[in-house]
Every structure is written in C-alpha cells, then in structure tokens.
Length: 264
Image (tube, rainbow, N blue to C red; front, top):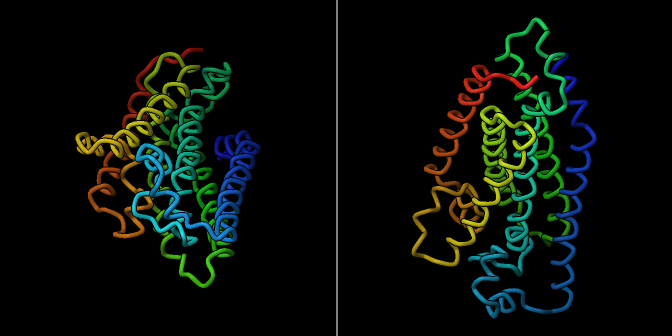
C-alpha cells in the first residue's frame, strides 16, 4: 500500500494538470460551437466544402455538426488523443522511472516480490486513468449539456466515454509492456509515444484511402470513433480485440519485467 500511495503522490500534480487541460479543451471546443451557432453559419455546409483530407483530420464523417452532440463527436477525436497520450506516458514512466531516476535499489529492497510491485504500480496507473476519465465524462456532460438545448446527450457521451476508457487502458498497457521490455528506461516513454503516433496517423490514412481500410484492425483509434459508436454503438469485435490485447500486454508486462536484468 505504501508503494501505491507513493505513486499516487508522485503523479498528483501532473494528473491535476491533465484534468485542467481536458476541461479547457472541452470548454474551448464547445465555445466554438456556440460561436458558429450564433453566427447563423451552417457547419454541415461549411465542412462539406472542405477537402476530404481536412474532413478526415477533423473527424467529421457522418456527424451532424449543427447539434451539440454532433460537434462534440468531432471534438472527441482530440479528447481521445489527449487521454491516450496521458495513459501511454503514465504506463511507460510508472514502470521505467525507478531505473531512470536510480531509485530501483530503494524500491526492490522492500520485502515485496517484483510482480507484486508491478501489480501495485499498475493499480496506481489505472486509478489515475480512471480519475481523468471520470473528470472528462463529468465535464463533457456539464459543458455539452449547456449547449444542447434540450437534446439528449447522456447516451452519446456515455458510449464515447466508455470507448475512451477502453483505449486508455489499452495504451496504458502498451506503455507498461514497452517499459518492461526495453533495456533503456529513458527511452520507454519515447517508444510508447511513437507507437501512439503511428497508430494515430494510420487512422487518418485509412479515412483518406478505402484501399487500406483493412488496416483498421491495427489502429485502436478506429475502434471507437464517435461517428461510428454514436450511430451504431460499440462493435463487439473491437471490444473483444481490445480486451484480448489488454490481457496479453498486461501478462507480458509482468513476465518481461520479472525476468529481465534491471539497470541499477
């Protein structure tokens, strides 16, 4: 329990900053929706005139941007990106920072098995991911609700947030697996961020070219897109793939870290 409290305190300030940043993103994004609505401009017509590449970048798809929930669906792409960056970074650093900061000897002289320490660290990381998810969910309901004008938003926001939480956990264990396997702890966060960036760019490429649509299984950013889940709900196949990947990567984290030589 001391390790859990230590990890929560160590990441407390950064978590607060991430939460404030998320609230600011949602607030500023929906503020733009209010500005467009009051100007009388048709967002749908404006987006239809834009190049396909820009539409893909904005994540428009079939969303009705004249509604608060539709505009939030476009904004959700960037909410998802921010939340997965946080999850990836915390997953990589919470495992690798002991070697990076030369505190590995202090931690592992405690009468705790290595696997138990990793388990506690994972629990602390999951707690922080959960807190950011709850703050994001609450802020989304409050801020989008302010502009909804009677429109039902609870189900749309709820299903996107559920998808976001799954991806947060997925990228968290991607980060821990990379940190547990690399012999250079200082580069764990960079490698994990590289994986996230590649999958994010791939999701754009798929939107631009139907020829590579089959690659959508290789980028988690295509699993729970707002334009898909708001209309048809979560796809069980993608939920299943995510759960399997989370389980496999979590097991890899324990096995790889338990077996490798640590840099003291």
